[in-house]
Image 1 (spheres, rainbow, N blue to C red):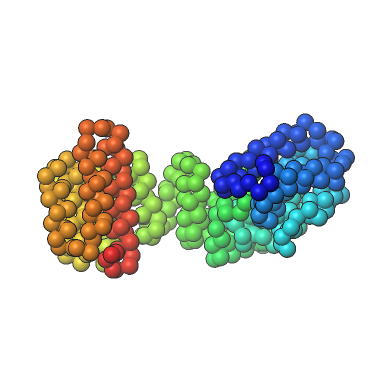
Image 2 (image 1 turned 90 degrees about the vertical axis):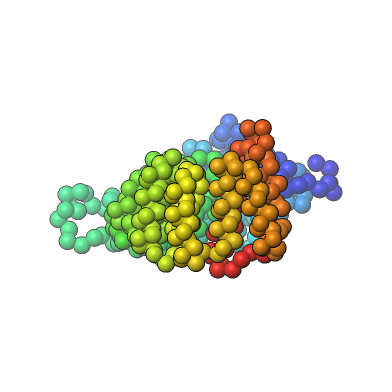
Length: 400
């Protein structure tokens, strides 16, 4: 890279990734040499960063150092020597730029110690950062819990009338996590090459927490979020089974159940969830919205008009119902009625003209002879109208 040359964020990200990959390969092949010459090795890392990315941000610079530090520890044969670990930390810390430079290093070192089963030392590095990320919170709780299992045998546990201190700390950490609700997988330090060990720990602590605190719906909620991120259908099903028994009247859970049924192409199951929502939330418009959405996808006129009539009775904004009518005509492949609805809406809702113009343009693709364009147009129309109507229902005001 020529000095003074400006690179886009995407290009910088890709080049950093390649540089990280090069160093990872070098570390794997020369781990003994790296361990014996830590100051020299980290000097090479800094030199490569500064020469290749002279204008790199302090945050990206420090994150790169953190990832290299984790790799050094991950492949080192000296990892069980805690003095060596501290030596790696010292060499990495002196190169970092931000004031909170120790945070990233402490997290990556703590995660490596956790990975190899050194739970006591891992706690020293991780316990102060549990509230930054759910994955860190479950990691800390896992350390406490695993230490508690090592302190007493199963036979001794059966004789005890009180829980051990470490297990109590594990339970307290998980309960406090459900209260604080930290974000999930938002720390750059968690963007490791292999997070399998963290994922296993997360699921273990979530299901343990549901045994300890069966009335805490948040553990199901965060579990579903994690399952969605990692596309873990098995865990999603398991959590939904738990939720169907323990949180059958929770709107957040039922919403997740509805969309899961849709993804599974289980229309009768989705309809059952809608009926359950209407029963528990008779004054809430969202269940009717979901009923209309389901009727659109199945294009059943009787079902659609039943939900439509109920939505009008319950006071759903008229222009959102008109949008649903337009979408129903589109999915019923009634070209004339669909565009007629748009023309009527332009006259009745002149302030909505900007949106109607967009819908008309996309609808033309739906009625084209190109199957690919039809599929894209269908998804775009459904997503757009759904997001618009949900926002209107949330704010109780028309979006202009």
